[in-house]
Image (tube, rainbow over all chains, first blue to last red; front, side):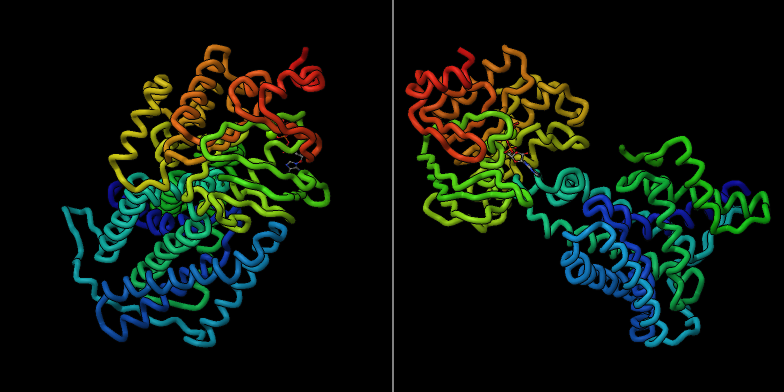
Length: 285
Length: 234
Ligand SMILES: Nc1ncnc2c1ncn2[C@@H]1O[C@H](COP(=O)(O)OP(=O)(O)OP(=O)(O)O)[C@@H](O)[C@H]1O
Ligand SMILES: [Mg+2]
């Protein structure tokens, strides 16, 4: 029973991590809150669903959703944020909120206001050991997010570009003076963050078996709470906070059956942690 | 090798450099001395491309680099030891050094440059797995110097590199600077320690509120009564 809840909590948490990491990476390098990131997540789900209908292969549709999201994330960086970065910090935030709303309306207009089913056969099968049971989509989520997080970790710690990305998050100017093309690294942050958000969109689309225009609304603010909880800009902090929120939601609602809105858990956790650690779990002053 | 013509730099409305001219020839060690706020750091940052000049031109090896991005200037062989060290706090010593060698792609070259850095400052070898922010101020200063040498720059810009070092290491740092100079690296040095800077340098410029008021060989500058009084405390 406890193992079952643990597995449920971790699979929910790993999707949160996939969504929130892009937000934290963008904040880490540009110090802006990329609210429209949740729109990228929804776009990933739609692109995934559309390509699934075209090619009838889940893995290809996952790939398409990720690539679609990455392209969109890159365009947002280049044509929305970069031109207004020199303005006050509030300008990119307003632009981001505006874009997010516009994206939700665009999805409604293009794909219709109703939910669409994403009924993909993944081909993994359920996993059952005694009374412990993982559904196929849970196995999928755990597998895909584990692989993505592993890649991200290897990339950041082992590659030259990953090193440059970490250096840029610490000190853009000094990194540039050592030969780092800062605008390429900024673009890279958006691309990698959006790849993960696109994957999250597809995974949730398949997990819930539905895709709808405002599916990004709740993740938009929940990811914000998670990122603050983990410590703005901290990648390990964001992963930790995502898992904590995933587990708390599962335990408080699933195990203790507290009559409590599930989506408030992230915020309560955030408030509790900020009371004792104003910079979040692993954040810096 | 480096030539600046009528450089004018402003932060907002206030002018930090008011039409500055200087040259640094290949292999030379040139210093700029001046009071706090005279604009010394601004000169180095402008050469690196970190601040834009609103008038004037900069040439490096005959090429106009006035509008070249900092990362391209780094690839051309300019390297800055920034004021205040600016070590990457969450990166380890080794990672900081790797960042210094970012323009190099050859593994062997990077490894041998790192060996040299450890040879130069043995304490960095002991601390190699420690993250930058956990080093002492002096150790961070050594790391900042070593990091800027990693790319084997043609020209190195040093902004108050001996600041905060104990006398032994100030000596050591100036030894390093002297060695680099002997190896033919072009050095542009900004120092609070004007006495040491003039001892090490071939030539010097005196900067006052954004203007160069004097330019001569270091020997002549060090002997100048006005310089003695204002910068050498004698
Ligand atoms: N980022 C900035 N914004 C506004 N003004 C600045 C900025 N940086 C420097 N200045 C101003 O430009 C002038 C020159 O500064 P600079 O840092 O070049 O002086 P410096 O000679 O290096 O001084 P120090 O010996 O104290 O390091 C100063 O008046 C300073 O206040
Ligand atoms: Mg200075």
